[in-house]
Length: 290
Image (cartoon, rainbow, N blue to C red):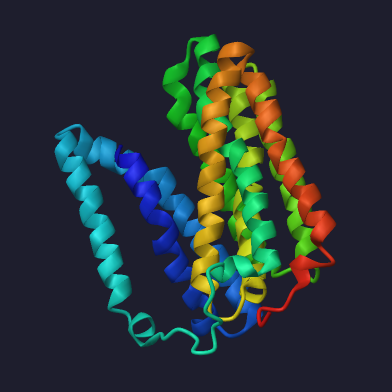
């Protein structure tokens, strides 16, 4: 339950922070680096946060651990709200008032669909990897192996930050989604904890660069005055995909095998890559003023 509440809080909170980067960092190259740094910071939190909470607080009191998590969330939210940039930000007065909002942008709709498809791979991994380790009698290594997943993403986030933004973002995004889909599907081929860890490391290396590329594209694709909402929709699409991947992943694992679940649902990233490729010269090159 705590995980569900935390997940529900992430889209609006993260969207508000990301929407400020174009205001704080005007230079596209530096903004790309900022998105990369944010992605790396999130991976550090995802990897070490649970360890700190479980080892340092959870062993003493479960209620205490939840209170510490809530306190961290409140502290971060208030710190963000008291920043000068946050308090002085005002919505674009020329935003068109309609029901669709950010979804009026065809490029935003494409990205929401793409991350819905790609998110299924993450949901499948979270269900199928523990089941795969069950077969080897080493389910207790699940947390450690997921750490390799995060390390891959963190290292790739640092690398893509130094590499700079691509000259053709839609093409880069399509290629990254191919890697995302193929690498996550390949995790099902693991037959031992070591092989699974190495495959998760490779799969993780597609995550941060994909989000960094998408974040930079959204600056130009979101209709005027809807950037915060657009980021929220992308997060919502991803979380929806993770939920579907977890549900279908469990069903496929029980009916067939964990490897089959990852192969079927991991390929959602490949479908997302095809979608991005087909729209690269149209919706994904639309102007933010549309």
